[in-house]
Image 1 (cartoon, rainbow, N blue to C red):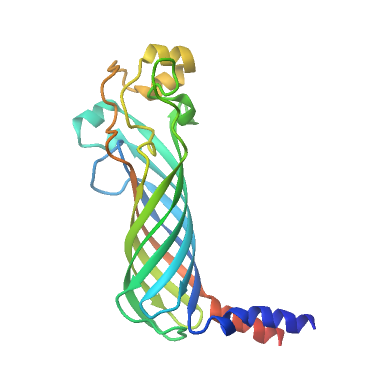
Image 2: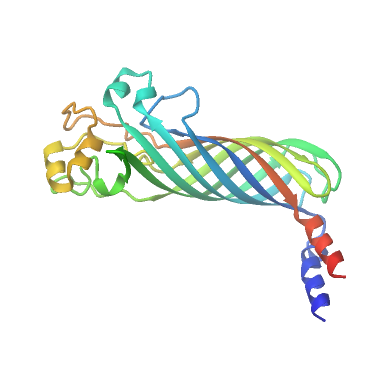
Length: 269
């Protein structure tokens, strides 16, 4: 009885959802931060990310996806070509976690389900939430920057509060996917993620009063606010009219769930 129950549970998605294709994909790649710190463009900033995604395709050209991603990237004004950024001297490491729901459109029709080789380029877009935690290195230790209020957030008379750690994010991109056979899929992707926050790199507004910041939150906060000690209280430290984003390129390997379920059901029989 137990064997029959397990077999029915495994076959239920195949029997009830009709013609469809499902896969579970693990991806890895490079990720770079596009914000107020480091190069304004050029080669991606140093970083990497891992993601786990589920994809459901019920039409030859359209699919739905959900994905969770963990990433970390570093940006430094020392690599900037702009003189003002190089003189500012800020370096930041940001850890991100994202969850997205996305739609996908393939250029070539894909047979579903498919246990033979086929491939297609595709476009995708979605909506989700990204959590971010910018950090800076001080005396050999990486410290969280948000609690320090490096632009004077939360100080008396500042009129500002400490920024949040989560924001709406919109992934957009393109890729190429191949169904390699009954078990595996492979993909490569390039993605731009717009984030509804300008604090992914902890830089957005103006320089604070460094003396007041040091008295309230210590030497580390004062250092991170103005690493090169330029004394520009009230002047622009970042560009508050531009939100931050992430650029990513990755490769992934996926498992066809239909084949997995069928094999498990056959084994139980």
